[in-house]
Amino acid sequence: MQKKKSGWRRFLPGRLGKTSPLVPVLNLHGPIGRGGKFSQSLSLASTVGQIEKAFKFKEAAAVALVINSPGGSPAQSNLIMRRIRQLAEENEKPVFAFVEDVAASGGYMLAIAADEIYVDPSSIIGSIGVISAGFGYNELIERYGVERRVYTAGTNKLKLDPFSPEKKDDVRWLEGLQQDIHTIFKDMVHERRGKRLIEDDEIDLMNGDVWIGQKAVDLGLVDGVGDIRSTLRRKFGKETKMKLIQAPSRSPFRFLGLDHFQNRLVNAAVESIEEKAAYSRFGL
Image (cartoon, rainbow, N blue to C red; front, side, top):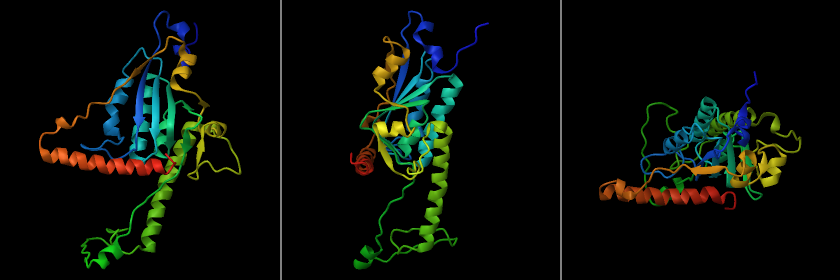
């Protein structure tokens, strides 16, 4: 009895006869956030429908991810990545990721859901770290005579209050949380990339730094330089068809009433600013 082929080699053109290979394509673009009714950011809630639809094509040779994300919520990044892996294993489908401008931090976490990652020569890759940012308003409210009133039950209920002076104990507490999340992130990268990562005493791949295109290939963070069309046609044949899995329409007319529309506009404006700030960290 002929041994069954494993992995994406089972889907090579010779086994498909006259049928053109099909590859569903998921666009994962933008910062990764908590999601919600008015949110435009990536979250498990906003992407799960597309992800599940992509893996329902039984005849598909693979599933492709097109990623352009500066990162965001660690939890949502992990949830999206894990859902892709669950469905890939349940349906025995190979997954290929194609990075456009950036796959950094949580964006790189999405990329490692793929069995192979391909990038543009100018793609920005990495930022395997954790960041927290905010503002301190305590001197501002003092200047305008504003009194801060907070009542809690529990000595540790209020930490890093932006309207109070920063406390060293609160900063140490936050740094501890960041270290724990960073450890989880590093373990995920080692789990998914394994021996493909290059050991170099002079380069710490997990220090939050980023690398461009071919350098990321050389370090083992990704597998090659290539665009989605040429790479998939090289793997599955020139007749390979790609099917974009569209996100549900988010027309403002879905929400009746002026208050809903105003909330949507305000949230969209805030998210636009946050998105620009996220991408600007990488010069984009």
